[in-house]
Structures are given as C-alpha cells and as structure tokens.
Amino acid sequence: MNKMLQKVITEKRLSWERSDINIENIMVQLSSKSIDMLHYFIENNCDSYNEKTFGQGDFRKKALGLNILRDEIEGLIPKYISNGPGILLIKNVLPSEYTDFDKWKSGEMTFNGKDTIKWKKHLNKLKMALAVISCQLGYLHLQGEEDEEGEKRVYVKEIKDRGMKYGPGSNAHYSDTNQGGDFHTDGAERPFPIPKYLPILFIRPSERGGQMVIKSIYPTHNRLYKNSPELLKCLYENFIWDRRGSQGEGESNTFEKPIFTYSPKESLIFSYLRVYIESGYSIEKKKMTSEEIAALNALDKEISDENLYLSIKFQPGNLFISNNYMTIHGRPKEGYKDSKLDPHKQRLMIRTWVSEIS
Image (tube, rainbow, N blue to C red; front, side):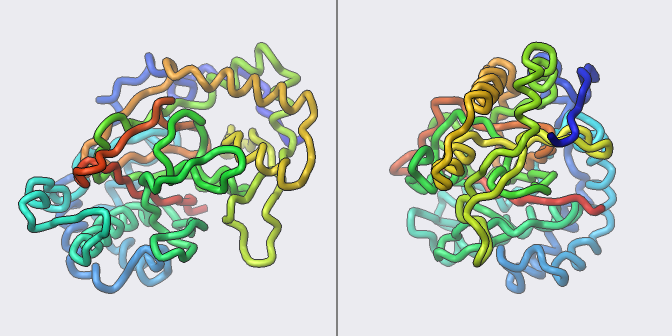
C-alpha cells in the first residue's frame, strides 16, 4: 500500500465545509497596474500565439516578464491556495471591454453557433489572459483532448456543452457536457503527478444553472479514517483507470494509480472520477473486488452531499483558482441548460492545468 495519512486533520484552513467559508473572504481584485499590464501584453502579442503555444518557452518567458502581475499573483498563492483553503476568486481580472456583453449584442462583437473570425480572435485574447496568469503559477500542461478542429493537445481548454453525454460506454469528458453531479478532480484520467492548480476563467453564463460547487477533501478523509479505516486503506491501493484518450502514441489506454496518496511535502493528494475507474476495468475486462466496490461506495456517500459544498456563481471576467490536490468540484446534479436562441446565454469557461515550479 502507498503511504497513508494516518490522522484526523482539524485545521479549518484545510478541513473546511460550506459553513466555514465566507465567499467574501476568498475574493480579491488585482490592482489596476496589473490589469493594465495584462491588457497591454495581450494587445501587443495576440497575433503571435494561440492555445497550442501558450505553454511554450518563448511565451512563458515573456509572460514572466510582467513583474508587477507576477509579484501580485505570487503573493496570493500561499495565503489562499498552498497554505489556505485551496480556493481563490479574482474579480474582474480582464479589462471591461473584453467582457462587455452590450457591445457584443450591438453587433460590434457578434458570435453565434458558427464562430465568426472576429469572435475567434477575441476568444484568443481571453485565452491568452488566462495563460499569462497561469504562467505565474507554474508550468502549463497540455490537455490531451480534441479542440474544435479535431486536433489534440491544447494549453487552454474551452469548457462548454458540446452536446455530448458522459457516462458508461461513452468516451466523452465531463467538461464537454452540461451534466451535473459526479464530483471530481481534474486530470483524473492521468497518472500522477496530476495538475496542482486549476485556473478557470468565466466568460458566459448559461440560461439556467451552471454554478460550480466545490469543497475540501479533508473532511471526507477524516470521516473515512474514523468510521471506515479499512475501506480508506483500499483507496490508497491502485485502481485501473481509463486514459480517456489522453495517452500518447503507443501508450496503453489504461493505467494504475490510487485515489488517495500522501507525501510529507504536499500532505494529502486526491484524484477521482468514478466513471473513469469503472471504464478502466471494463476496458481491461476485469472486475473490481467487493472491497474495492465498497470503498468507492463509501467514498461516494461522503462526497455526494451537496449541502457541504460551497456554491459559486461566476460573473464574466471572474477568475477562479483551486488547489486540485485537496479540493473536489462539480455541478449541481441537475446540471445546466443553455439557450438555443441566445448565444449570450450559452455557458463558456476556459481552463488551464498547471503544475507548480519545484
């Protein structure tokens, strides 16, 4: 068995539930100098880079040259992400012209189901803004999922309803659907190390629903440790996972890793999306043991209570950063619904996966 965290964590900065968190206490705003610096950088570089190059050396070097922005972001991470609750909401991280819906509706920035060239260029600016801030956190991961042209490996992923259904027998990703429930960590379909930081930039709301729900995994671990220690031990053993198409050429489409792991430096690290485990066993034509099924059921019971989650309804231009090692997130079980007629009510977020600088 992998090394196990064998104690109850009571520190509220780590082991928090909804009643312990005031949304105002995790909300900050960048200085006007940082926003102006970000704006200037984007306007002068938007034609030179895109979602496939944002994580590469030349772009990263330029992004790290924004010293005022870098110092401000670096000052926030220890307090909120590394040594705090693992969540941070930055308000209005973009210049207002980037999220001005009235301007879009007036025809200056029209977009619809078939993205116009003008909208694509604007969206690239939004992706660049997220990439620049993400570079201040660490190294961007390539996300091994198909982009709009059917190509893989992008540094900035669009999170929207692509009309897909995720579940048993489907190879769809949760992020490509409007479904709810299934609380999870990002990058669960990858071997360790998974991305530590999960920055998400909110661009458009849905017609109905679409908020994020999130909580710390420590209370779940505490309860399993006290009430079902043998089942918790099982969650530190390896399970078979479906790579979900993220594997490289010649690599197996399944792999093994535990759900919980522990290291003195990072403390608890959690990776989970049950459907990816069940799919992994199905691909390998193997069955889970009764103990493994019981362990997953016990875990699901602990993480399924939405009343324990902090619910966050984003505004356009909000940037949310979470610690992907210690928090678990999803959507309310009813999911969300986009408007079929109004493209301004079709939910859109963009995401990066980031590993810290060691």
